[in-house]
Length: 169
Length: 251
Image (cartoon, rainbow over all chains, first blue to last red):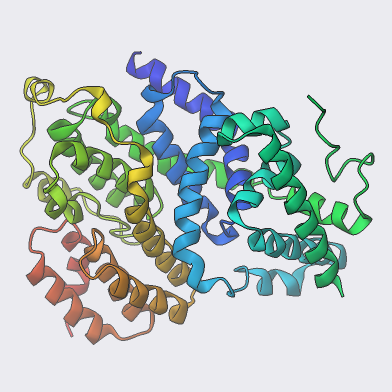
C-alpha cells in the first residue's frame, strides 16, 4: 500500500469510527476527562498496526479489542482513585438546567453501576446492551461460547437491575 | 439455537422503566465535534512523524523503528500533546522489544511525554530541538534499516505493553489533573508513579509534570532548582529545551 493510500485508509477509519471508539472507551470505564487522551492512544495504535489488520475480523471488532486492552490498563492504574467523582460535574451542575442535570445524574449513576460489574460481565453487557452486537458476535469477539455469553448477560442484568433500584432508594 | 433476548432498552423487554432509563443514559456519550477535530490534529502530528524519514513504523522494527521514534518524539514534543504519547509509548515498546531487550535505557529519550504540554500552546519547543533530538541517534539509511529488519512476525502482541500502559496512563492522568487545576490530585498521582515505577520508562516525564506542578503552585524557585537538577541528570534529554526559558529567567 502506498503511503497516500495508507493515510487515506487511516483517515477513513478515523472519520467512520471515532464516535465508536469514544463511546466504547466511556463504556469501558474511561472517565470523561481522560477519554480524549485514550482515544488518541487507540488511533495511534491503529495507525501503527494497520498492516496487521487483515480483515479476519470486522474493523469494529478489531477496534474494540484495542479499546479493551487500553481501557483495561487504564482502569487498573485508576483503581486507587475509584471514589473520585467524575471530573467537571460540579462545574456543569451549577449552570445546567434541570433536565440536563437529571440526565447527567442518571448517567453518572449508570456508570457507577457499570463500574461495579465484574469485568467479564461488564464486557458482555456493554457489547449487547450498548453496542448492540448479537450473542454469536460477542461469543466470537471474546472467544467464549454462546452459552457463556448468555449466562454472563443474565448475571450482569440481574446485578445492574439490583444496583439500579438500590441506588435509587 | 435460540434467539437473543430483547435488549433492555427495547419495549419488548421486561426491564423496569428505571433500568431502561439507566441504559438509555449510558448511550448518551457522544464526543463533541471539537473533540474529533482536536484529536485528529494531535494524531496527525504523530502519524506524520511515524512515517517520516527511515520508513513507516508499521513496516519496520529494530533500529529503523527506533530511529523514526526519535522523530515521533520530536513531533510529539512540538505538538505539545501528552495524550499521543500513550500510543507512542506503546509503539515504542513494540519497537524496543524487537530491537533489543536491553534498550530500556533509550526509552526516556525517545518518549518525551508531554514535553511542553500544559496547554499545548505556550511552551512549544523551538525548532532547534531538532538537533537536540537528532544528536543522539544516528540517522539510518534505508539500506541499514532494511538489513536490520527482522521478520514482521517478530512484532509482539499488544498485550505485552500493559505494564507500560499503566505507567503511561498515570502520567497522562497526572497531567490531566494539573490541567484541571487539581494540584493535590496531580501530586498524589505523581507520588503513586514514584512508588510504583521508581525506575520507570517515564521517569523524566514524571519529573517534568512535577516541575510544572511546582510552577502552577507558585513555587518558582523550587521549580527552578528541580529543573537545574533535571538538566544535570539528563543532559541530553529533549525536555531540556522546554526547561530552558525557566532556567534562563533571572531570579
